[in-house]
Length: 501
Image 1: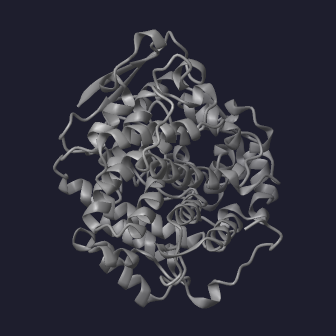
Image 2: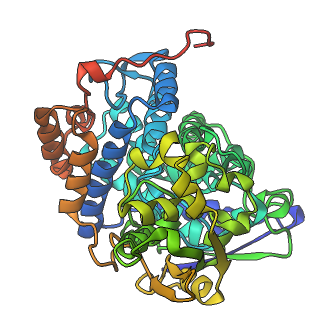
Image 3: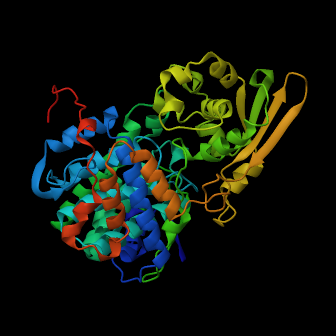
């Protein structure tokens, strides 16, 4: 690995391409690096994981809307839409839109946290859609996904977006563009221009994750993937991009992020060095914001230790800066304490999540979020007793560079009315690679079967799992087998026809 120093340069400096971050990203996207075997297995795991959550969200309103928009753009040799017959094909950018929304809707797929946040699995829908439309092989797809993960993970390590209230999809646009470059074996020059275009058009604010969180949270990464596909298409036709997009005098760093005086350090593999960043990412056992995963596990265990929840006077969660200020009371969002808040808001409220997990001793991607569940009197009463605090010890662990030492948990202090205290802490979620029950292929398949049960047939489930685990050997005609068809009675939701498409 190498550290790339990224900073603003005045226009008169005429910064050379080879010294720009976008060029260095393009170099690794266009190189001939050997593919790491473990990375290949993780790609397969994450395709299974994405399919799980996409099918589970098939009839949720944002997913239905996105799917119907995509269906209005048919293409004979296009890409497939999750849940529909493989004979239905649409333009790849619209398949990416529909499938990306389905993958993101339940907040239930993989994550990587460092200087910023990310869901690297958001790369997959766009790269898969283009692979299907362009007749790529399974190995081409693997190469593209590995690059997408590599770029996004390392941008997330080096450049913090959220401190400037910029949404994390600004790292997704460039990573999808780079992944598509690897998939299609494009030149360094075309990928360089594509990465810059993709960043330029995917910068948006974090208001999408603040206050009353709307369905746009699910659409946002799908939108970034769609825009990245369109950017690559333009650059393949010989068009250019704003340049240098990171280091320019009026660039993203200069006027969106920390300004001309800031130096960012972005780690990247050397040219032809195997890309393994996907192995640093982790998926979710529970359908909720990643920083709540470990605390859900802790709440489940505390459920057996607190005999009577009405005896609780107060619950204090000591955790990292990110957890406290994004999903904790440090966010100062009254919606996070509101029983009438949207599902999207509730899955970004650790107070709500911890209260439900403590009461129920479990967590469910549907039952834990129903309006009836959120408004239960005992839950609301417990919920209001929970506060979070930043503990610099947990913040330091959160930012630990060694992935084996990074922590995303916290310490819970339960104060009872009789003056006694129950206190426990957890470093990482049980499903984390360093947790009690790390997710491996068996767990990914179990999650897939659990979430798709009753939505697809056993025959369809078995067919998909057989094909995806044979990904290395799939030919171009076989990539349609990575799609899934739901049972006909499930496909009955419609949205308003009063729309443009």
